[in-house]
Amino acid sequence: MSTLFSLKDKVAVITGSSRGIGRAIAEAMADAGAHVVISSRKKESCEPVAETIRARGGSAVVIPCNISNPDELEKLVDETGKQLGSIDCLVLNAASNPVYGPMIDVSDDAFDKIMGNNVRANMQLAHLVLPDMAKKGDGSIIIISSIAGMVGSKNLGVYAISKAADSQLARNLAVEWSPKGIRANCIAPGLVKTDFAKALWDNPKTRAYVEKVTPLGHIGEPEDIAGVAVFLASRAARFITGQTIVADGGVTIADIF
View 1 (tube, one colour):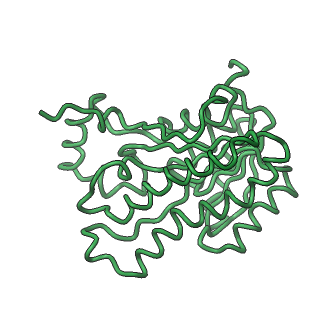
View 2 (view 1 turned 120 degrees about the vertical axis):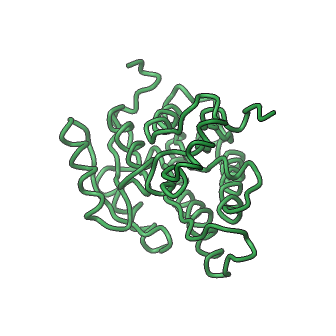
């Protein structure tokens, strides 16, 4: 592997990494040489991921964290420091979407949960790691957004708002912190085969439609997003900041006429 794409001895924290895109990113970063922190709400769901990484020669520790709890966010950063050292790459992947349907039917509690977990928690956790990154003059923040935040939506409206906000969060962080050597970027996946999106890709009608309108002709796999994350964390992306990288098989540029 070119050293441009190496993450050797970097410390990477990936939230929501017990499954799906988060797990794929953690495994790919470990393969690239990073010491990775597997984090999700439940320790028992994280351990198999860490064991898989260790079994193939990688470095992984488990630090559970409920991103909706500010105290647990602080503990995640503190425990990472104790076990591995300061954080070089933070991947903000964990997210919530408890509703499917028009925004008029979304309760205040559901709205607050979506915005709290998908935006506020990302900002809070980023702010916990940014000062140490600034001291080193280097670091990468990667937020997993969504193409839902780039288009209108009938059934994912509030979730889409939160993902649009994540792209703006990355731009704001980039403007504020890039002079300190820190890069902040988003990845906006299209439909990917994860448990989180299973209601969409496991529906034959929806799946057939998405595959039809996708120029590449198929739904994404978690590994398709993992490679982009490794790139953004590496020296290969050292001149990229404040951007949202779309990985959607071409859906957002498709010719529908």
